[in-house]
Structures are given as structure tokens and as C-alpha cells.
Amino acid sequence: MISARPAVDPTDVWAIVPAAGLGSRMGIDRPKQYIQLLNKPILGWVLQALLAEPRIRGIALVVSAQDEQVDSLPELAHPAIERVIGGSERQDSVLCGLDALAKRAQSNDWVLVHDAARPCLHPEDLSRLIECTHNPAFSGGILATPVADTLKRADSRRQVVQTVSRSGLWRALTPQIFRLDHLRAALTSAARERVPVTDEAQAMERAGHAVRLVPGRADNLKITYPEDLALAEAVLSVRHDPHAGDPAERK
Image (cartoon, rainbow, N blue to C red; front, top):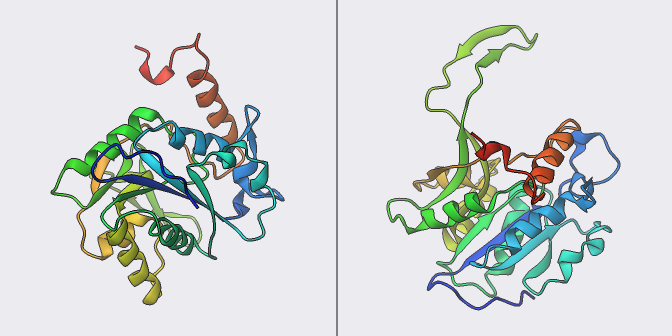
């Protein structure tokens, strides 16, 4: 059971970290969230970033029932973190996290969902995302970055068939934040109708909610392939070295 921190705002903020996946594209024999980056597992960096935000009252860490490595995380001893058993797909695991939080949170509380494989979340991005909830025109928001690369559409032979305009296109990042009851209903509806969703915003869009794009940093990397590890280590080493400036802030 989560031991909630003291309330900061009339409407509280909670977090879910779905970490029940295997990360098969990494080509390793263990879940990628336990790969070491600078002597700390990827998942440890993720939890550290969320625990550092005082507006987050509790975190549901959703893991596989077969996960034997989660107990090695020092962060798991923090009273704000509750371990929850997840489902077979990401949206199932997020629903499991929502069910756990619903025992402590109010139905209109805000819940942010953050990937277990994004260790480079910057505190300023997290703060801006939470602040976006003050805009009543939107049902929540997601961190995102405008697409910078030229996009190509290919056929089954990997031959280019079209250059796709990147105008108005954004890369969806995490965290993504929505009210507990809205997100729970949207994901439940998608699951009931067997509609796969790749992120929480897709479920909310499908349910007719307005989702705000909150500009985030491009170095909020998702560890997907082996080459991503060196990039993440570079970001974290500079950010946590008091003698080194953040390359994203240098002129």
C-alpha cells in the first residue's frame, strides 16, 4: 500500500511506471529496465526523477509477476512507491496501476504515466507537464518534441514510396498526464473493444478528450536499441556532474 506524501494541491498528482515488459528489441536475457547506466539500473533513474518532484504523492510501479530483480532496487523501499502486478500488454499494466491508485486517490486526481525505459527525464519538463493541468481547455497533456527529421514512407521492399510532410508532426514522449477517472474509462473502453493503444494519449483521443502537447527536451530518450545506452549515459553523466554544464543549455 502506498504511503501518500502530504497533499500539496487540492487535486493531487500520482504516477504510474509500467515496467512489466521484456524489451525484446534489446536482444538481452533480462528486462531492459534493469540494465545499468552509471552504476544504477535504468528503472532506478526513472524512479529517482519522479521521487524528486514533491507534487507527486505516490507511485505505482507495475511489474511482471515473474520479475525477480525488482527487489534489488533501493528505491523500492521508499514509502511513496507501491509494487503492483501488471498485465500482458502496456495498457493492461497501466489499468492495473490505476486500480491500485484508486484505493488511495480521488477520481479526479491527476495521474501521470512514465515509461520505465526513459531514464533522462528532466525536472523542468516534469514540472511543465504538471502545470499544464491548470488549463481547463484540455483533459491533460503529454511531453512531445516536433519531428525534425525528414520522414519517408516505404513499401514492403523498403523502397521509398513517399516523402511525408513533417509539418504539424510531433514525437510523443512520456510522462503523459490525465485525470484518473478519465484515463481509466478510456483504457477500459479500448480494452473492451480490443483496440490496441500505444500510449495513454491515444486512448484519451479515442474517447474524445482534448490532449495538450507540452514541448519537452529531445534528450528524454527511450532505451529501445543497444546504441541508445551510450546516448543516455552521456546525458546523465553531464547532467549529474556538478562541474559540467548541460549541453542543451550551452550557447
